[in-house]
Amino acid sequence: MENFRKWVETALGSGYEYEVYLESTEKLLVETSNEQPENLSKSKELGLGIRVIKDFKQGFAYTTEVSQDSVIKCVKKAVESLELTPKDEGFVLNKNPSKIELKTIYDSEGTSISVDDRIEMLINLERLAKRFDRRIVGSRKSSLKELKVEVYCLNSYGLEYSYKTTYFSCFTSALAVENGEETISYEYRAGRFIKDIDFEEMAKDVSFKAVSQLGASSYETKVIPVVFFRDSAALLLEAFSPMFLGDSLVKDKTMLKGKENTTVGSPMLTIIDDGLLENGLGSLELDAEGIPSRKNPVIEKGVFKGFLHSLYTAVKCGVEPTGNSVRNSFKSLPTSGIRNLYIEKGTYSLDDLLNAHDETFLVLDLMGLHTVDPISGDFSLGASGIILKKGRKEKAVRGVVIGGNVKDLWGKLVGIGKDLRMYGHVGSPSLLIEGITVGS
Image (cartoon, rainbow, N blue to C red; front, side):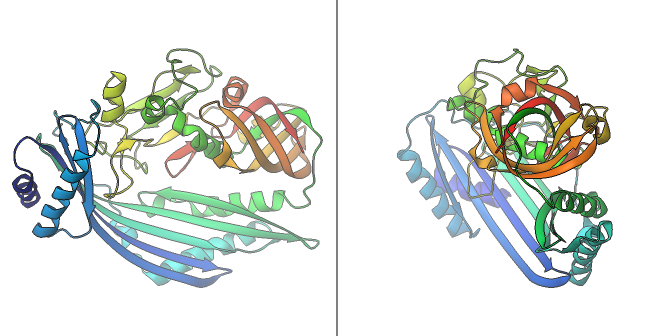
């Protein structure tokens, strides 16, 4: 890393602050369909991003060549872009880097699994789904992706950190058929270690969701208690997660602006973003700018506690950063983002939630999540699932619409399951909402 520091400082001259972010990513993707291998792809990307700051003006450039000449050219491009950037007091670097030894989160055992064995793992996943119910006849696609990532970061104030880690993600689908009707459902899991992915639970969940929606029909419009199955609850949380970010606050694009320390939901509701969650997909002792990670309650017992900040948004808002600076890759600047965001689990089983009322709608699938509005909190989503009477299935429904405002939804939360699962960077248990308008 000292070579990069020397090259950058030589090219910049005096008066500039700088940050160098080097990233290497190796990807291995295996896909199957109907118990047959379908696709295998491997790729590797190496690149370096350089951020330069002077007089509160910022420039950025990146390169996929890491030779001395390429780095010097990249620095010059960053300086050129700086000259075109207006001043902003938020353009700062981490001037007080912490000396933290980063733990190694690397799955050597997982990365050593052969391609043939990975294919067999996916085929077994599809077979498991069929064993759970005879109406599961196949899978359109299942995939297992591995990422091996190495990162090096340094800045002109002495920040220097590096780490090597792994990420695994698995996706599967299940096709259910009965009396000539077909339904399909999907399931996703991810973890830093391949052993963190529960293939049997994936097969059980995807089979349950696909079979449950056979024979689905429309439903009358009415207000009814709703249980969001854990993955649907997590997807809804993810869709609204931008409202918690410092960038949304700075851009005035969040309904939570000015709501700190006010009640925004049921006292049962606690939402946490934890950059230190054990083996979490977004876990590391430091964030992307070298700020120490921490556990941040976003909503605690129904009270909004505050936003998730990068250095830039913290300066703009006059607060301390929360360890929530993230990068998509070396090609992008750091921004505020979630690390491991989840709704804290409760004490109820799923059956408890489904038996709490005489009639309940269990939501197994949501459509149109990209249309939710974090500024107003409004949502109107397509949904499918099961209508239950006294805890027993009455009918499957599809093509219904559920709508309202997320603050009202949080306020009507009356039951939280103990079945918390993480789906990538976001997690949730199943949730019981006392009344939502459901209709065609």
